[in-house]
Image (cartoon, rainbow, N blue to C red; front, side, top):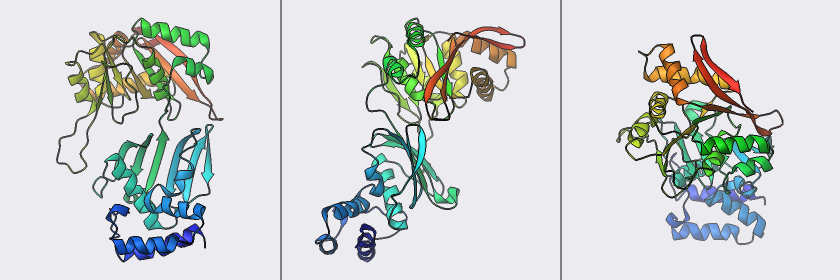
Length: 365
């Protein structure tokens, strides 16, 4: 008998003892003794490998357990109980493993959210968090139409450094030397690039070269950045899916961070009205600050930044916004991921001047 068949037999027994509502999480500590005995009977004469597969699906991450140990797998995308993909070496590949039943898949998703301390509902069908060394995003079936969708992105276990970027051929020695000097001289950076281009990894590497005496205030939606030293602090936004607590966005965290004696401000991703507060802070001090932004080029990043600042200050003219950007930022570092999945630093461009026609950029490396 296959692992799937055994699991389905056990699931039928569980249904008679346990609720099958959408929030159900299979938890052996809550099983009645009679149910535990029935499960043990089903698994008594099963070979060890099959038994392990069934137990993984009952109480753990099911078929994904075979993928988790492989550190070369950077992303796992689950589109449904029988549609799993993973990224390895920059290439997306289908995975043959699948969940035995819809209830098994539902229980797995509930376990992920439970482990991460997150909650989803009909009113709040999305949630983000970190669990088992992965950043995850969940999208409920009410939005995706067919199945619940889970996206897992692995967070690096070993710290990102500039030398590691060079070992992985993300950048040349000359580029990294220039970047290290720029960080030491307290230049203000934006690391830009499309999704999956390695922006967070590069930002972590830049932070690793920060002086141990510099206090960084790190602001994120999801914890992905590593504190460079003991004096630094990480702040996370808050969104209560139950609506009982007030939301705290990045703009508010930027304002509060200025009262926390920061030497540098680090923004995980500039994506909203916090752009205005961040640039105002940079224009009056706090040099050596950094952040990431979704854009394919330095010029596109400037356009996006202008739009985000104007969201926070619609009364400002475009020229005022551009002057603020020119006073606040020194460099835009462009990350790139090619068709083969290889990541590298595409360019470092310096904000040279602000003219009536726009912001002029000078390519450095």
